[in-house]
Length: 239
Image 1: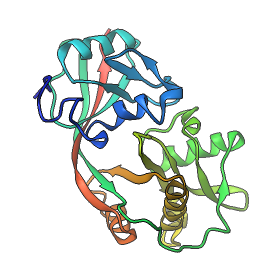
Image 2 (image 1 turned 135 degrees about the horizontal axis):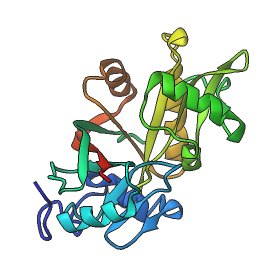
Image 3 (image 1 turned 45 degrees about the vertical axis):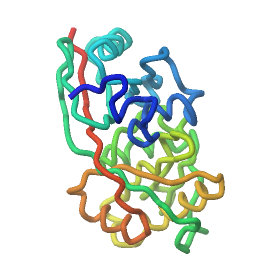
């Protein structure tokens, strides 16, 4: 299914979270944007995410022009699409979207959480490569707001912020080293992100696969509610 102008999910009427990457690139993440009035992308070392005003063959063709051969792009779409020739679909799955509708965050310990910066990038890359919370690249830290837990100088858990389709901010990269599971670090980090996002007058949200049962249970326990399903695509540009 392709979106068409005037449809219920076309840009004129859609909710920012129906097309979150596009709206993030136009609003809260605008400083990282490159592209044009129809197709916007992040720098390749920040993230492979791309946003389209409408998921038409013409716009997917424009995205193809902006993408180096052999590289992948990640799309979060409000409905299924049919990528035209020139793309290989490496992944297509339902993507669950949750929103935090409350004015305050649950109380959780935070004095052991540390802000993560440039010096922590190698450790962040290693932890996300091990735990696979989602794509994390050498400059993903530029999204900002990353905090973690360290033991003996080793980064063992972290969470940060990513897409910012105003007035929403996405909680992202929530992960814990397998040797440190069961200590409540994920919940503490997410609660701290909620505090920081709410203090900015914004609304927290996040994405996950529905079969990620432990994370899903945690987020519901913390007060997130299910908003709906998007489609996530990982498309590879063919040479």
